[in-house]
Length: 176
Image (cartoon, rainbow, N blue to C red; front, side, top):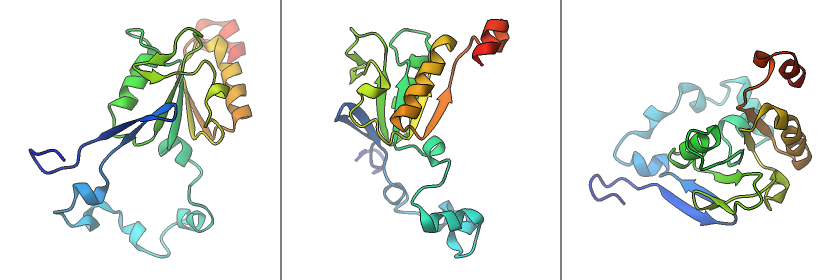
């Protein structure tokens, strides 16, 4: 507990090959407030929206893998200053994400990124089956193989952060 304001602190857990960031629950952070103000009026109704029907049949909604992932593989994770992989990893580590992060770096000699165990390929992650999200931060020429790896591994969602497609000409347009 943060002694300055009696608010629970962020907890970072290392283990299982990834890093898990746990933020205080809304009940912990709003214990002196009326919690109803944090909910949209539709969540209080039994017949509110079409998405509520989906909740009856599933614990997750179709886009939860992208917007509320529990596990993220960052393919292209790096410590190299100025790289997209470094920026994304740093943002995940310093945000209230709350899930497990698996850095993936194709350099076989690299064992960790920012002290977190890294993997050479997505398939090397023991918990890769059912991975919610892959953030792909690799050069354009490598994206196709990474996407095939994601499909093979059952990754539920992907975000591609890459350059070198049609903006660089005919060859890039073919890759896109």
